[in-house]
Image 1 (cartoon, one colour):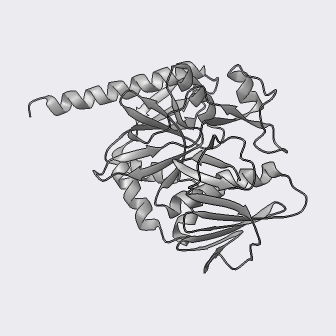
Image 2: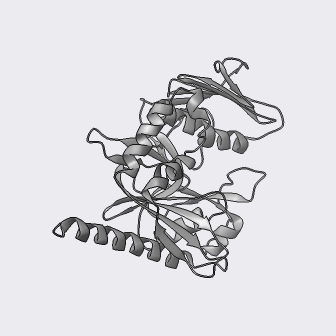
Image 3: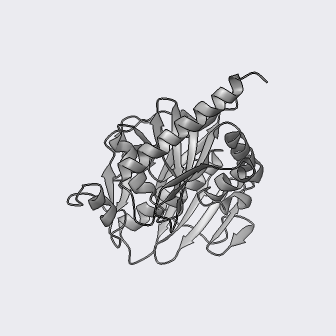
Amino acid sequence: MPFYRAYGLTIRSDIELPALPQVEGEAYDIDFRAGPVTPGDGGETKFRNWEASEGRFLAHFYDVCRVLVTGGDNVVYDRLPGNDDSQIVSVLLGTCLAAILMQRRILPIHSCCVLTDRGAVLVMGPSGAGKSTTLGGLLELGLPMLADDVTGLTIDANGRPIAVPAFPAIRLWQDSLERLGHVSTGLPRVRSDMEKFYLPASSFHDRPEPIRGIVRLAPTNGEQLKIDPIAPADQVETLSRFIFRKNFIDGMNLRRLAFGHVASTVNAVTMLKAARPATGIEPRELARRVLAAMDELEASRHRQAMSPA
């Protein structure tokens, strides 16, 4: 049975995970396997298609599968008729890995992430905000990727927020691939029923790194790119909004953990909001200007800290 690597964890899987690098060895942290999943086994908290309790999570993806995630190390998927492996894998690498991270006290943040010379930078945004194309622009600047869609967030022994890298593949829709100068020929699909593909990352950094800054992308009707600091009063709410599958937190009794991670992070990093122009902007130029704004804000704060009272 092959072993794979994601979020610094080794996964043993009885189903092929085409986007993840394979690794050698016999020890593993997480086990993905087919088996029966019985509704009601997730726990006492019930909400729509999922149920949970501390250390347990069960979800029902209609016409695809049921999954049970337990203890931060075990995922059982119960395939339903009429679907293929890509649909199962999409659930395993999305919702299931998010639940695994939470159970391991790592907060999944809906963001891409790259490494700069001063630390990791996360780019958050709702679907369609341009995270993937912005990531493409950051990679064009020569920055290695840590994550393309969900970044792990943890706090180290010194209280520093740390970005946990995901795996070296970027999930891109057909039009985003073409915008970044790639073709889909030969690339594995994220799901067989979607025009979305895994593009291997040109450069990937596989070690956790301190977080330098966070950027929230936002659509706008304006004609110019507008980049502003996020007000301190809005920072906790902004980061909390982009916890991936955040509704699971209360079900698994992790609210205190999540708030602690968010509060520690916003107190330590630079946070910006980038409003993209409605007419569009080249990904490389957007990435360059966002990093320049971060440099400028950090330099301004340093000057203020060094100036006499």
